[in-house]
Length: 227
Image 1 (cartoon, rainbow, N blue to C red):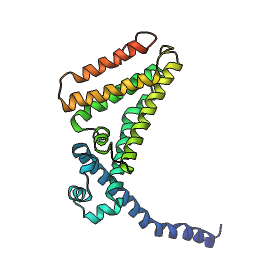
Image 2: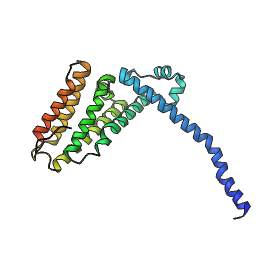
Image 3: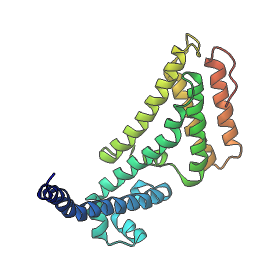
């Protein structure tokens, strides 16, 4: 290859890159800043709820200008939706994906519940956006409610599929109602939040675990040892 050709290639590959580099760095910095704002908003939302979030409050917490915070979201509503999506993403990473390593069938259902309980143990202290959000937006149609409902429905659908698979694997009785079983498991979690976080009743986690054992005893083909 001639020197002229090498220079031409170098020129064509480095000059556009040099021009794009500042833009790329600016984009990365913007993404990092937005992630930091969402992180701060997430921490606040677990304490004061999604409805308590505002551009002004976040600007104060992050020590940014209101216009700076607004530029990353465009509206308070979009900021709230970003928080819901991030919360659900973390829920998936902590509860759903690790359970996929368990064997199909009842072991996976047990893993889902066990991971869920670990997360709830933390949420009892910090709060749960899905729980508080349901109270704040249950009768308020709009994008924020839609984002909350979609997240919860997505998770419950995954739980239901795990129960269906357990029945297909022969781990549940042939007359087991998969939808009822999934409903009862979800009900345990909701009761645990109410009992432990709101009423501060001791022993709530143990009762939730016992409730899950009772569900397995009623639906499983053979006795199951809780994880």
